[in-house]
Image (cartoon, rainbow, N blue to C red; front, top):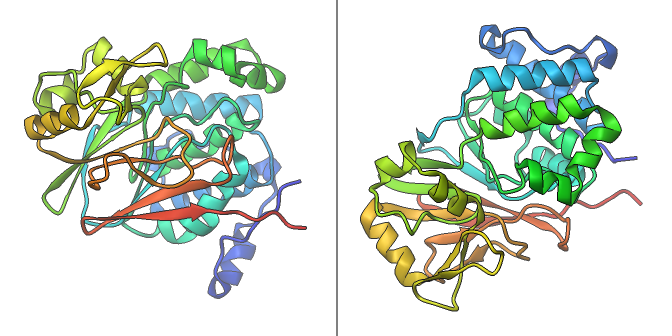
Length: 325
């Protein structure tokens, strides 16, 4: 049984009681775009409470949610904001970390009424046991809040899911058609997003910057080739070379500081945030605060970490949830 940490402030005790609900009456809106701000707010809190109580949406609600997400096609490749941005790396089906993120790292109640943004760097499923719950909340949250940006990781992939456990999880809860629908949702995710903040361009990817592309930033954003997208999902920074070499993963490339500096000069990108690797801190990959690795799950790690980008400064936040004894 998971411990549910209240997301509500003491001043909102009355509102907390109003939000409590009979989960059997919870439903997926037929048109998210038609919801009022208050309806979006209440839906977000209700969906979080359902997810945090370790409840999977039934097949009808999950199907409706996925179809709306696919048809919305809301993924933006660029956005501008001078407000705080929270960056979340790989979650890999860790419900505990998801709960902590939205109770402590980013208080959901406050976030929904703010102008802040959250960028998720992909790898929502596989390895951990709660990929479906992680997906149901993040997809729903992105539908009610355009300030939530979901990127595609290398684990948002059919073949990878069949190797690392998510396929078996889906089949234990739903059925084959649901797995296919989830893959369609994965294919609608963007492999990258660019934020302009205080006149600086920040690139968010799952694996690595497309250093092998010779295009400018606009072409990379809107005309990424299949090979370049594959590299974005699978590549890694390295200190073993200053340039580019074959990736030990067997996909993508490894790139060093010179290759990355050339990419920055060509595109005007100031910083890159990526996930893809298990790290036990917010890692400053090249030691110059321009390339960061963020891993936010306790899966295969002692704890996860998030990054905060605000006013041109980057800081680390621990996702150090503590289970009830």
